[in-house]
Length: 349
Ligand SMILES: [Zn+2]
Image 1 (cartoon, rainbow, N blue to C red):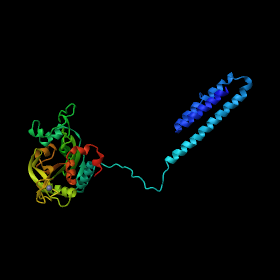
Image 2: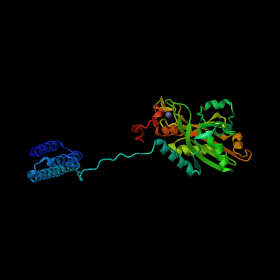
Image 3: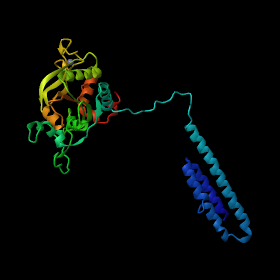
Image 4: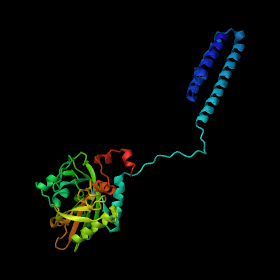
């Protein structure tokens, strides 16, 4: 029986040597001192010990138990001390930089654009991403089967169509907010800047299926093209820099009459189209295209319950990703990088 005690002690010492962590030590404690542990196992064999030797046997088991307990406590102290040394902090060393996040570049651009138009008294709106066909097309003077609708490849939503407004779509442009704003405002003056997500099913180096636009809409009595030009010029100088000029090029859109494409002078060549007598690689002509604009078509005003004989207005729609890249002078090979979530690209701004 005494050999059992010696055997347990020997095994314990061997096991203890292998222990390197508090977790292992706790398991060892249970294995030896637990209710079903080795020490209790030995103690239960007391019934096989002759009566006269039971007292001494009991004392020996107790000595073993005390020894194991003390050894485990000692080991615990050693392990904790070692751990402390590993975690020792030198408070005199300079701190490590803590990584911190930032807003997405498109969010920064939206914030800046909103502030510029706020200064001119425009109200910031964010019209819906899921829209009815009526607000995206018919209300903008593009009746069903009109060829102009072919220019707008559209995502259709699998949802029962509206009796009046047709099918449900993902809004292909921020212009869908024009008639909604006219109806909401009830009566001019209207000065709205609608910044929202827009969707078209394209995915290549120059297109992403989800992008952002900002749409200016200004309606009042006596509003004319001069107001439009002045407002866009104010935006261009605030956003791109004081030395920038803009120009309006006649164009055709269904929902404005007359319609224009708006260009801004290129920053690289200062609008000359040339850098050291060579053609400017960014613009080729001195001008960069901002987007479309024009005087709101009388039919669109009527859809918005506004009398075109009393009021007139203008509208423009520009892409946020596009103006952001122009501002930065970025010539990005693949626009999809904006939404790839690649921190190496995003953290540069
Ligand atoms: Zn240029």
